Length: 580
Picture 1 (cartoon, rainbow, N blue to C red):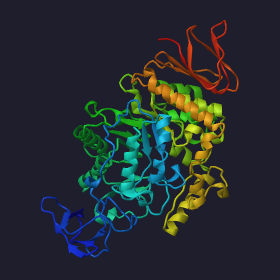
Picture 2 (tube, rainbow, N blue to C red):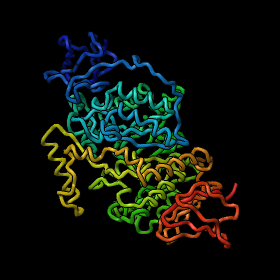
Picture 3 (cartoon, rainbow, N blue to C red):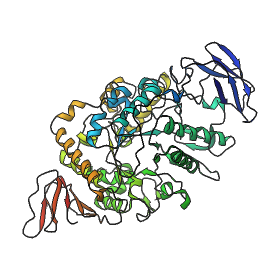
Picture 4 (cartoon, rainbow, N blue to C red):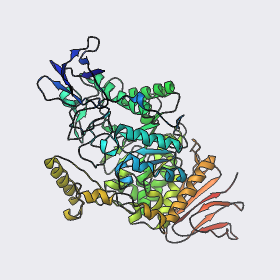
């Protein structure tokens, strides 16, 4: 088989395999590349020695059976025999479900997660969004410290385990989206700098030196990450990728990396004959991120909308610390602004940042599905000191209101695993670093961070403790108990409405006409439908036409009174048909 590697600064490269060492030759047509034909099977272990270094794993390794510091093993994507044909499933009309393989079940594997797919199909989910699955040191972690962007974490099940999971999901009609991290690699097990200029000090990120997207040697680095993205979509039959923190992809070159990536993905979709999409995580509130390339944008197909989350969170909880401060000044107004125009910060002053932030987004030219709306995510839960979910402090009624606002909003809805039954298991920050010094640094850093906000160090969970990960695993028995079972039934009812009522998935969201009363009743329209969520502890009165029909209600609704007012019980929500 052919072994290849890009190592532009090496004077010699030696291939190490189970049967010996093999000097590699420069590739005449590809500057900086080396190649060698040598025997190889799926059981072969191999690595590359650069000049006089010990052998290192292949930067493009598809499998690292012994972890990020071990040698690579070759795989042939063509050997896999898919059981279920898959035409793809596009983003418009989707309902995403963010899932962490390591805590979705106690076992923490693709195989164990497969047994829960019937639950997601019955719920009405269309796409699973897997949190990162690239290898990282140790067994358990969030996955954002991955160091091998082409491979699959072996403790989860490795490449074949992921393929079996995706194939099984397709058998249930579920698409699969993968969260990928292009903006940095983890602090342990990252061997890319030894091979070439993958990173640059010209830009800095929260994780240190930036990925080299615009300096000398950057053409190969850009290709490295683009080819990795295409390999996930092509070889694992994924429907899309979620791109972590794209605002940290520093690129001052003539064309932004994201534009090149989106063009490559669009071209691949055309070749494969099935829809593919990219979802950005971005804190810039810049419409250019999701504006098509011909119109001057980066061409990504959607982005997470944290502004909607922050507005909803403050309206539900009353929290006002940190980045919630501007939203908490008038939660009702903040929530209606995001329902009307997507972004809350659209050039307004951000007290958290100490400056104006964001740009206006035009709903008339931006289809609603290009923004994702959610009440909870791994970030918004896990980056709290105790990893507490909304269910830890909200009543079932307020959780039902959150569900109605997310699932009936104009945006593509996304749930975080367990949210559908109001899971009370926390989702905490956990690691399994094998380097004792790094483990201790992470432990101290986590406690120091929250001590600055008034949390006693002893109250902050130890990321390295196995108990922290175990506490974060879903308790599936919980979903059968009161009040969780009732909330699960409510989610199923709302999702069924979203699938059957065209007004809830129309790309046109210019006529939502959201309102919020001083006593915390939020309403908005989707065509002939009126969505109402009463967040207060007192009943709310809604003027409605006499022909109004209740499609769904968290609590039983009395008929409108003689004045034409519908009395919405405290902490409850309803979806009403007022016309059409």
